[in-house]
Length: 139
Image (tube, rainbow, N blue to C red; front, side, top):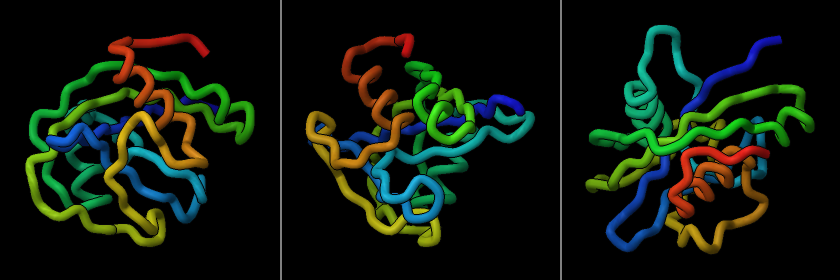
């Protein structure tokens, strides 16, 4: 078994709200920030831009890496080990759309201090790192 590297992207608007999606397929019914697995030869920033375009139809500009999380709780529960590189992007406009309804059924702008439940571990970790301005914490 191998460890999978993914990105998680916090998209933040002018009100300080972040964009979340409610998952439908794998990891349903969890709420989560958006992201996905890094393709071979792809930078974290390229992956973030591609995944956000694929998942919600937005073009993000200049996403910045701010942290990394090792999602061990999900590994213990599911046997799948992912390491998430966390990026932050400013929302610059456009209407987010559900481009992959088989993976995500609902979008919501949310106050990061009041996350909807149930919430996906990698997303919760990424948001916590961002809020605490930490690069990493052991779990």
